[in-house]
Length: 66
Image 1 (cartoon, rainbow, N blue to C red):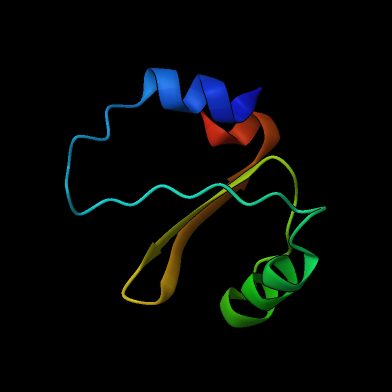
Image 2: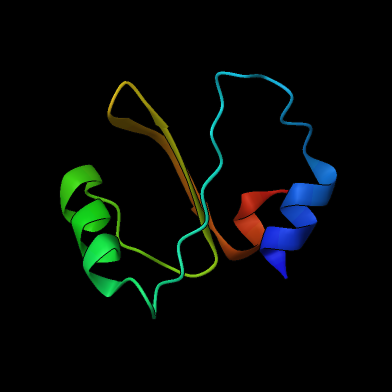
C-alpha cells in the first residue's frame, strides 16, 4: 500500500533518481546485504535514500511521509 501511495504522490521526473522496490520475503539475501552495507535495520515498509553509496536518509511506516 505504501509503495503505491508513494508512486502516486511523488514526482520522479529527475533522471538521476532511481526508485527500486524490494520484496523482503522473496529477496532475503539482498535485504540482509543492504542492512550490512548501510547499517540500517530493514523494516517494512521502509524507504532508503542512497547517494554515493551512503544511506543519506531512512524511514519506515508512517515516518516515510508521503
